[in-house]
Every structure is written in C-alpha cells, then in structure tokens.
Amino acid sequence: MSRYEEAKKLYAAYGIDTDAAIAKLKNIPVSLHCWQGDDVQGFDSKDALSGGIMTTGNYPGKATTPDELMADMEKVISLCPGKAKLNLHACYAIFEDGEFVDRDKLEPKHFKKWVNFAKKHNMGIDFNPTFFSHPMVKDGLTLSSPDESVRNFWIEHGKACIRISQYFAEETGVPCVMNIWTGDGFKDIPADRLGPRMRYKDSILEILSEPFDKKLVKPSVESKVFGIGVESFTAGSAEFALSLAATTDGCIPLMDNGHYHPQEYVSDKISALLCFYPELALHITRGVRWDSDHVLLFDDETREIAKEIVRNDALDRVYMALDYFDASINRISAWTVGFRSWQKALLQAMCLPNAELKKLQDEGKFTELMVKQEEAKMLPFGDVWEEYCKTCGVVAGPEWFEEVKQYEQDVLSKRNS
Ligand code: RNT
Ligand code: ZN
Image 1 (cartoon, protein in one colour):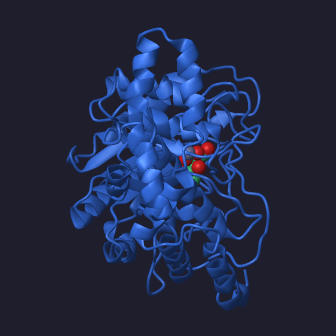
Image 2: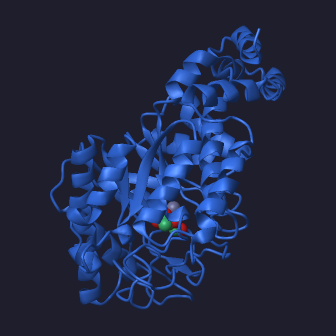
C-alpha cells in the first residue's frame, strides 16, 4: 500500500475524504500577484515605490520587462499545484511602439498581452488601479486630496481601471475583482480627519459611477491601519472601508492581514464579515512586526485563515489573493513558497474533522475539543500534500528548488538587474 493509501485510510477513520479534498482544491482559484517579480516597480514609471509600502533587499535578477515578468510567472506556475488567477496592477500596462499614456488614459489595449498570457494559462484576471509611485500623488494624497485636479486625475484612473476590469472579465469569462487601495494619509497629527475621508468616499463613489456589469466586475476597497511615513492617519481605515462596502451596492470589503494591529487577527474577522456580506476579498500576506509583506508561510495564522474559509463553507464567497514582496531573496522562490503555503493551508483545512470539532464545541465538550484539535495536527498531512502535488503534475518535496536554482543560473543571472 502506498503512503497515500495508508494516509487516506487514517483520514477516513475521522470521516475525512482526502480524494474529494484534492479534487476540490484543484479548481479553486487563488490570485497570484505579478508584483512579487519586480519589487512592485511596474513598467509605466521609474519612480521609487511610495505610498507607505516598501520593499527591502536587492537580490539580483529581478524582471524589468513584460517578457521577463511573464517568463518568471510561468516558472512559478509550473512549480505550484492548484489553480492560479493573475493579479495585475495598472502600473504593469504594456506600451508598444514608443507609445505612452498616463494612468488616467489607460485602455484595455494596454493589457492585451496580459490577456493573452492569462488565456494561455487558463487564468482569470484580478486588477488594481495603481494610486502610488506617481508624480500626481500630492502631499501623500490621491483620491482624498484637497486639490481637485489631483482627485480628478485619480478618479479618471479608477474609471479607466473599471473599463479594463470589464474587458478582462469579458475576455477570460471569469469575474474580475478590482481592488481600490490608496496609501492616502498623514505622517503627523492632522487638523482635519473628516475632510480627507469625505473626499475619499466621494471619489470612490464617483469611480463606481462608471457603468459596469456587476456580475463581471467586483470592486473592492482595502483598508489599512498605517503605512511607513503615514503613521498618524490613514484615510481608508477599517471602519471607512467596511462602511463604504456595506452601503455601496456591489462593493466588497477587502481585508489584508498585514493591515491591522499585531494582536488583531483576520482569521477572527472573516466570520464577522460573512454574517453581513455576500462576498469578501482577502490579501494574504505575512507581516513581521508591521505590514512588512514577508513571504507567506505555512504558519499558524495562515492556517487559521484557511480554516475559517473552508469550515464556514465560504470558498465561493471569499476572493483569495496573495500580497507579499520580498526583494532580498530569489523572487521565483519567494513567489512559489507563498503560493504553495496557501495551497497547503487550504488543503489541510479541508482535511480536518471540522464537523466533529464543531459538534464538540456545541456540546460544550471543550476538554475533548482541545485534545482532538491537537491530535488532528498529527494526521499524516504530508502524504496528502504529496498526492495533491502529484495529481497536479508538480513536485511535492523541496526538489522544486533545484529548478529555481537552474533557472537562476540560466536566466536570472544573465539579467542586468
Ligand atoms: C499595501 C496594500 C496593497 C499593495 C498592493 C501592491 O499596503 O497591501 O494591496 O500591497 O496593491
Ligand atoms: Zn494588500
């Protein structure tokens, strides 16, 4: 009997069907962010990354052209089990033949190559307007700026992104989540908090007045507690984003687990939002002491988040996107470790005796609940993971890193970046 066959029997004794879990997970999309590949630089400007976010490190070999970035993503996809969805930022527009337009004038044609790439890999596309790293960010503000010309520029950008999102959905046949995040905020104590928030609200509503098909485009708003250089005030706080989503038809709240105080857990927040919102979105990341966007690992909170989605039967209500960027290590490896970690977290959540544990809780058997939760951790999950990877045609063990090393030697080391 193979190790998987034995493991399957052990799981079956708990009433867990590992074959079914494997078959299900294969078809669940997880958004793979393009921005791990080039430290959130994009192709439309040489401006340094700004907006309260930061990459650190200068590991050689980052992608600097669309072809390089696509080749790198292709490598990552080939090393990961499961179903990826492409997550793009507007700053990754591809201009051809010397053309250039600013962000307020972007059109679907500037993303045609990305659509071809997505189609080649049978992926849907998610999208993000890029409200940072740009000269029109004035005094750290975009959609909430007191300067009307600044606001209008960014509103036009947002509307252009709605049209592009609709184009993505029409081309791929998969709904596009369009996430609005700005770093708008102040370094020090503001004299007026309401003004920027009212302007931010009005600007987002103005963007969403652009006509779109609600079945195809899913706008979301991402909140944040603070950013580097904007420690005192963030316009798009948690209360702001949740209230906006709650009162705006078709708008989804997005929680990034790096965007809360360190003792607040998104794993605890998911069920709260599921009580009220038909759908929600996540940015899955790993903050170390702050919103540092370290590579996602198969750690406790990552697993707890996955459990909350799986055991609440919410896989079709939660849009899952990865959001981290480490420039200090091989970027292909960073991307791959994160994607594989989330796959592991989901698969393991599907292979827990969730119904039995819930019953123990409802019966008030808390001693037994603790014992069983701890014992379930010892089930031979590695064998199920191996089987999952095998059926997806990728290696389960650390051998995938050999391929990354080879790619580094053959491709990355030849780049001038
Ligand atoms: C920043 C937000 C945001 C970005 C991406 C690049 O704190 O998390 O989602 O990481 O849009
Ligand atoms: Zn995020």
